[in-house]
Image (cartoon, rainbow, N blue to C red; front, side, top):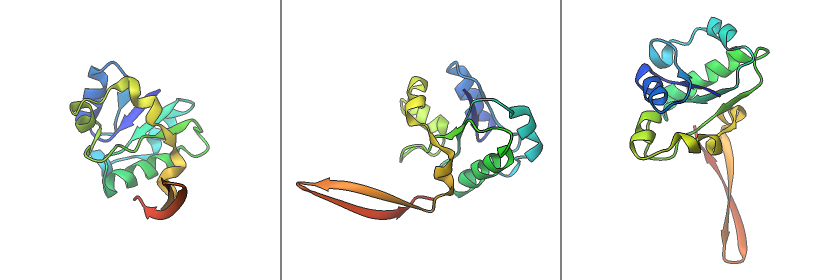
Length: 130
């Protein structure tokens, strides 16, 4: 897939690891919907920075791809990693990225139900991720 990250540093670090990656110039506030025309039919994985601006950036990209590209996934990084560069620096392996992919709809859901098993009981709670 082509990884779409937030920022030149992140794209450079992904490319250095041997994967195809790109970004839009100018960071989280610089997505131009016309860029979606160049991504038609590509297998895309968006890896936003782990903050409100990053999630908004990813949502804008997904909205602009509507009707042009249906093969779009996202990776929401684990706690402790602000961006993909932090994740790689902490020992993340690009070979593990496919396992972390989620449907892009996850960025449009305000609540997520989390199930936990405690002994012989299963409990659930709603959490707001973004």
